[in-house]
Amino acid sequence: MHASDGLPRAALWDMDGTLLDSAAYHWQAWHDTFAAEGRPLTYEEFVASFGQRNDTILRGLLGDDLPDAELARIGDAKEALYRQLVREQGVALLPGVRDWLGRLREAGFRQAVASAAPRANIEAILDALEIRPFFAAITSAEDVQRGKPDPQVFLLAAERLGVAPSRCVVLEDAPAGVEAGQRAGMRVIGVRSSHATLTADIAVDTLEQLPEDAFARLLG
Image (cartoon, rainbow, N blue to C red; front, side, top):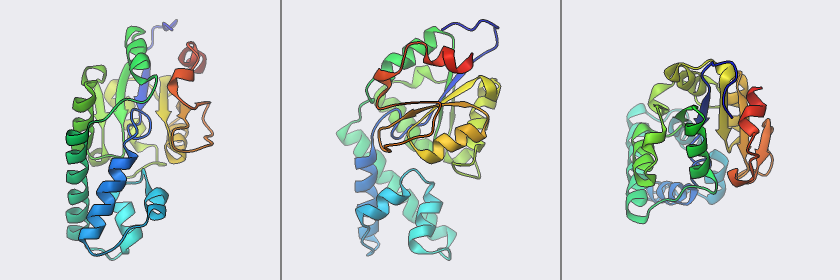
């Protein structure tokens, strides 16, 4: 898996649904937060908005005229509850993730987390999973103005790692994330943890199924 041309290569990891499955915690946190606001949230509404930025989710559910201060207050309450669940109940890496993190590091890949999540969530997850040393950069909701499928989060991650987009492989579980990676000019590995079909360069049910030469094949 070593580079033949000497140019640096990168693996850009989405977090939720790719590194770990924390959807149940997100659902509980959103459900309880909306209940506290006196507005029941259905599971269907949650699923339809999962993976989007909080401002997009809240304006979509509560209206475009939701004041910024209210948006921040409700979003912050949800994220604090989410981090509390992570700390109290724990999280686990999805199958094959730890193996690939190690394999990519040994092969000299630079790695980053590129997520729509707030930075505090990413920090909490990396600490809970004890995988922080694998990552040279983090890009979070605070770092970008536009969420996926806009490519901004991946382009910024590549820039922070000092790697050209054409030398980056994105690992994603959501259609919007796959599209964002493709629009960034990157190759994409799709993990079907939450969506049955993904139009990625390679798609697998779990990273355990990923061929050993997958990254070498994608980057030629």
